[in-house]
Image (cartoon, rainbow over all chains, first blue to last red; front, side, top):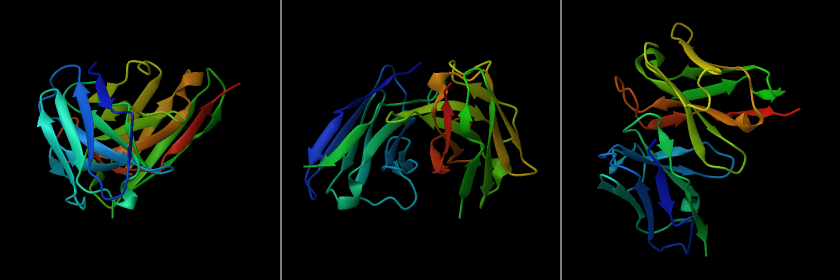
Length: 107
Length: 122
């Protein structure tokens, strides 16, 4: 099973600041990595697939990068609605696995 | 608009059974693989099971294999999860989720239901 480790667990930032979230895989997943956003009481929403491709309707301030085992989700300038929990997910191997999440909170 | 609506959650005793359903609309259900993903209270996301578009390829999380059975009825646009021998640690919100792209076995999920809560307790 591929283990995804997300860091930091919590990121405390102010609106307008840049957020950098990390996801590290226990082995290479090529570019088969996705990022999701989840707000309290809501289902997750797909942000990024294949490491760097934004899903439909996702604002350009969200970008993904990386390949192999190290990946980054960057939010260039935080909007109030971006404070949420972010998960990475790999689809390289079964079982599909998610990282433990990074909570982006208002400082 | 893509919509996924789960039902069938509730309270079950350890060792009991529940059957979850997910009714899909707004897309060609028979063309997409589907999965169940769960989230224990206050915890992260955990993939549970996958079924390919035609139902011929199925995968399970090892913790549920032999106890849970995924199936689909493409004529009714419905996905199911039969959950037997339930354990306390199966307690979670269960989401059905749609693969983003056709004809892939294992993709990211670009549509999710609202979830149905399963509580296993004596």
